[in-house]
Amino acid sequence: MSYRAPQDLALSLALSSILEAQVSAGRYPNVEQARRAALRVMQAHETSQRDVVAEEQGETALYDSMDFTRLALSAVSGVGVWTYEVSSDCFYCDEGISELYGIDPAQGAMGIKRSEFLANVHPDDLVSLRKTMAGGLVNSGDLELEYRIIHPGGVVRWVLSRGHTYFNSAGDPVRRTGVGVEMTAQRLLEQQLRQSQKMEAVGQLTGGLAHDFNNLLTGIMGSLEMLRLRVGQGRLEQLERYFEAAQSASRRAAALTHRLLAFSRRQTLEPMATDVNALINGMLELIGSTIGPQIHIDIQNETDLWLTQVDPNQLENALLNLCINARDAMALGGTLTIGTGNCNLTAKAAAELEVPPGDYLTLSVSDTGSGMSGEVIAHAFDPFFTTKPTGKGTGLGLSMIYGFVRQSGGSIQIQSRLEVGTTMTLYLPRSTLSVSADATAPTRPEALAGRGETVLVIDDEPTVRMLISEVLEDLGYTALNAADGAEGLQLLQSARRIDLLVTDVGLPGGLNGRQVADAGRSLRHDLKVLFITGYAHNALLWEEQLDPGMHLLTKPFSMDDLASRIKSVIES
Image (spheres, rainbow, N blue to C red):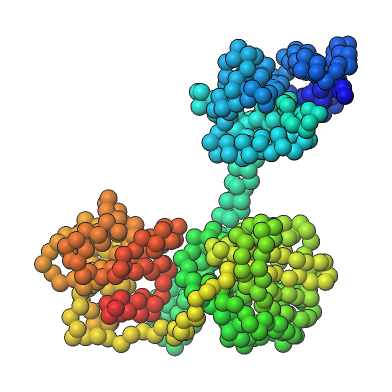
């Protein structure tokens, strides 16, 4: 049996790689010019064709071909030729590959052991590279792999390696030959493009955020100004509407911040075993009043539904947002279907949803509305993306849901057809825990005068210190105040009685809230601590590191929530 030396294959691999590398690197303005350059190499090759040789002479023919191809590609920057011999476990390569991989050209020409040849491969890519190389020696066919090389000077280069494995008459792998193409310039351009897209998204995010907060701040500031004016005029009969307007704007501002945190997956969640069917049943009245009588609600829940491990309050918000979106898509009325189910995601299905394989609960919301185009679906989870008219929506609803679901270990899927409807399906991880008892809504605790507890409040914001102190006094506690960690630590080092430390996490002056709390506990071993923070990106990490007797409350919070939390911490 005889065969032609693989010079045609090696050269075709090289030529296709030249076209890709030269155009992407900007050396040729278009594919046509790159093709003409490649054809000139092909014409040179056609004048140097070798005769057909027998199989036992294939090695000589191979190296003749490799010598020619090296010469043909010597003028092309970033492209080189290599061959790997199975018997010797050695690579042979030209100067192009030697320069690309950062090895000695003389050693590359004489042969270099595979372990040395791959010594400069990036550690993060080495395992997959070795696995692919081993698989290529077992399975015939072409090989293509992209990975990074770290040069001795520390410079990282991207390499696209294309090759083919050859087998003898017994079916054993003999050698692999191919080309290497530097892709660094293309990958850097892609990184710059991604960075540009990120900056564009940040610009869109901040612009929309500023617009909404300006509206909310106008409502708050205007209401407070009107309160001052009406009190000065002695007109006290209509003060309630200004109070309500300011509180309403404040609640909307807090909700907007919460949605932003959910979008960025930085919110502090309190996951627990949750019965989603019971959660849906408890929300039906609210959903019905929200979407209106023109829309029929159809419930299709799995009877033996598994529990899921999520924050039930956030899931309620997500469900309500999905129902509102469905309502807006059915301007003329229609049917809203809420359904649940159990499913086991195989490895393939889980990979498509970017979650681990296993058991999941599904919660779906379907409408018979206008549907979504492919372009809209592609941007549906982007911050501030909305198809609603200006002023009719912030565009944070779906991004908030996406962030919450991903942070909870699940995924979300959109299925939609124009003029038919849309189905949004949440995949939530199954819980093997039991459902905890429902907590009742917190109410302002009664004053505890006479108990004698003393609370130290540390916060650099005077308004926050004032409000917390007044809440403490209403509850019957004694309040001590400090503006920074050093001042608070002095009080902790004193002989004064302190039963609870309420401290901001981020404090000026070098000592943060955790450092003050740890120092205080070294002096007062039974000291209870309530951290408060507006830096939600640190909240998750802090919660994971809290010791027994330490608690966390994120801003913004209502005074009722603060009062309830202080009482529960002191009495715990």
